[in-house]
Structure formats: C-alpha cells, structure tokens
Length: 253
Image (cartoon, rainbow, N blue to C red; front, side):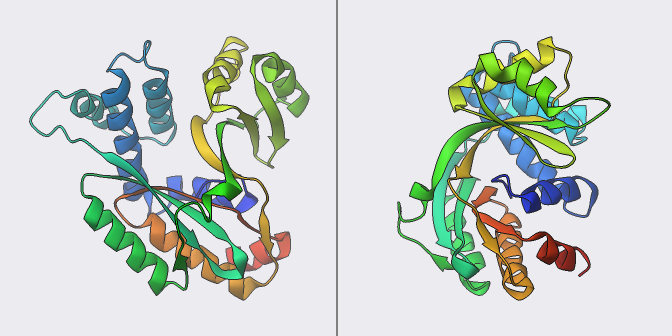
C-alpha cells in the first residue's frame, strides 16, 4: 500500500522479506514492461524505465527478469503484452478512502476481481470521483536513513530542484514533489552521492484518517491485503493510518 502512512512504510519493507515477494516481483516486472513500452528500452533516455529498474533492483528482482521485462515491454519476443491502466475507487471501514490502480490485459477480469475483494472484506465500491478528489498525484522519492544522513542534508540537496517537503519517517526519508519534478529531485540526490530506495508517481491523500481502534484497523488492513493479492492490482492507495498504539497491537498479531 502507498500513501505515506507509517503503516505503508512498514508494509513495503515486509513485502520485500516475507512470503509476498512473488507478488511484489510480478508488480515490479509489470512496471518495467509498461515503462519500456511507453518510452523505449534505453534507460538513459527513459527516466520512468530507469526508476522502475532501480526499484526492481532494490527489491532484489533478478537481472534476468529485468532484461526480459524490458524486451517484452519494447515489443521484442512473442510474449509481448500490452496493459491498460484502470483506477477503481472504494470505501473501507472507519471512513477510509481507497484508490485501486490496476494494470491489466483484461478489463472485465480486473473489474470483477476487484469488486469481489472489496465486497467480501467489508468495503464498498465507490462512484468515479467520489474518492479520488481526496488524493493528489505527487512525485515520491524514498531515501533510506543510513550513516550520518540527516533531514537537513536531504532538504539542502533537493530544495532547489522542486522538492516540496522532506519528512523523517523513522528509517526512511520521504521526499514529495510535483510529478514533473521527481526526476530532478532524484538526480540531485545522485549527484550528491545520496542513494535512494525508489522514485514513483503516487496518489497521496490530502489528509490521513487515523484509526484508533485495533479491530477497525485489522479490518482495513485485511481489505487492503485482499486487494493487493489481486493479480491485476498494481497499487493500492489509501488515506488510512493508525495510532502508534494500534500499530503495536497489529504487529503482535
């Protein structure tokens, strides 16, 4: 799940190390294929592909998988696939809002499987526009907090390159910018010798809904997990967050 909540950061790290690795790899490969199809196979001339490959490498996606994905995306080989992006909107428990981004080669299958995942897990599908207005597209660069790297150092590096905000998220710095400035932000980091975890354009909520009851939080997490398990779902964005006390309870489940 994306959207900059503390829970989202925790979920991302867990996905890399636990049993969801196969699902994560499938999503990373789709990202690479789509980026290669849209902008060509040259990493130097296609910053979207560069960032998709970087994210794959950071998540331990094998180089052979990366190379095959680039070839498929650029139309090389008999197994080349063309994906369509679709956004679905839903409401979760405790007043949470959810955007579901699909990359699919079968719209009917994606719609049916998303609807089943939502309704079976206590959510409701929402009309187009009734949820999306709560989110804005932003460029998001994640930097792991290592060594003596500080928030001030990050801010000094990216402030003149379009960064709007730098947030200390425990083990990670989250840098927010307009989508058009994201490449300039991560390029500034690279020029300063600062490694970055990922650079993506995401839907960011204007306000978080902080769930204060563990039972409700479990239900929202179950709903988001079910959506992320749908093969056609590429990203799930939510304004869901939880108090530190509730997060501690859920981490012990």
